[in-house]
Length: 232
Image (tube, rainbow, N blue to C red; front, side, top):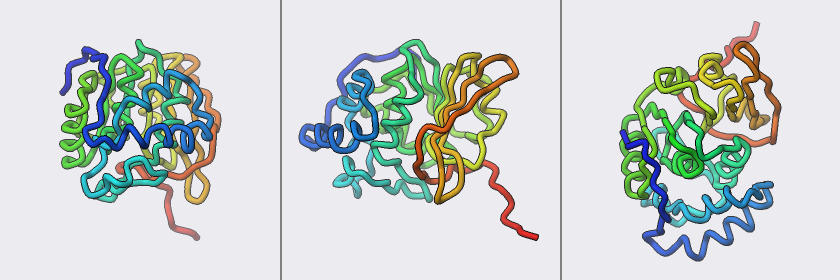
């Protein structure tokens, strides 16, 4: 568990790769995906992605590709992380729930743009690695928990925003219920080859709206219900 006090700092690359790679990342991968908010671009430019990439894949830290974390899990490409961060429209006072900590990189981006992040990871080794990565990056306004992401974290809610760091067939009602009125949930929803980043907004105690934002694909989050594969 990390303290909820937000630390304002500049996250420095320990390898020197960041200095050369980040301008190319932003200009060639991020801006073409309609990520133009200066505050979001600033976050992307000062959090060193290589701090969250496994040592064997350091050369891929700033490439437009998924990166294996082991255990059947992968880091999303930087452009997808950036667009999720952009489209959930965080405010500095927001409390955020993230489902699927993975490496901790998206967690770090969310933490930089909000007051506090609760992040759920179901795999013990990834959970431990993400905590270590976030500590090494100097990010302290996060609570990384080991647990079932599909159930959310009702004890810590309600949340201003919920971000799913992978794809699901459907968003569970249990997660939508953990949004504040006016809160947003963003998730990549659907089945390959067609998935859509979808933004859900809670409009009242019993009502939500949703709209599809853009097409993409992403690895499945573990623990979420899948449709039956039987055909009669």
